[in-house]
Length: 159
Image (cartoon, rainbow, N blue to C red; front, top):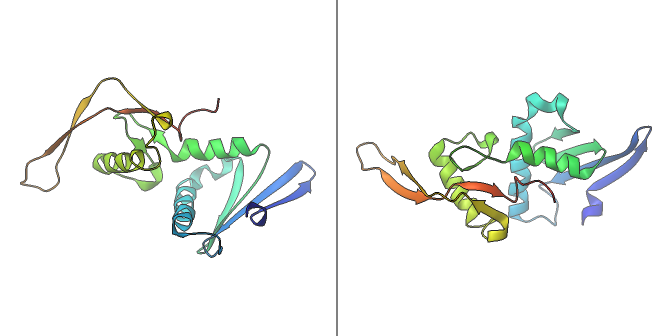
């Protein structure tokens, strides 16, 4: 239950929100725990931007703690904008994963066939393009036709 994770306290500058996610929370299943690990990975990658962030964070082996003042929407949007981007080839890029082009292609296809499988959650560019990937040296390249991603639920602005 969310009330177990969010603690509010009043400071001179307003309400401070403290949000703690623990991998040992009995209400969390494996996908939730994987999400906490992903958030920890992203926050580690964002460490150089910590002084510009609208939140503070603490990552341990067991949990991620976020703390902020101000609008929740602003904090979530800041995190999403730095976590997910659509790059020039039309892939959903997660900089924290440091994937090469083939990895970005595979990641994008995986996300589009699961979390973003519905048309309302994603949009493609009109033009289909050919991508080629070398799986093993000395073997033929694999060619695939794709429509590059132009927008998705994670990268669009609120309406």
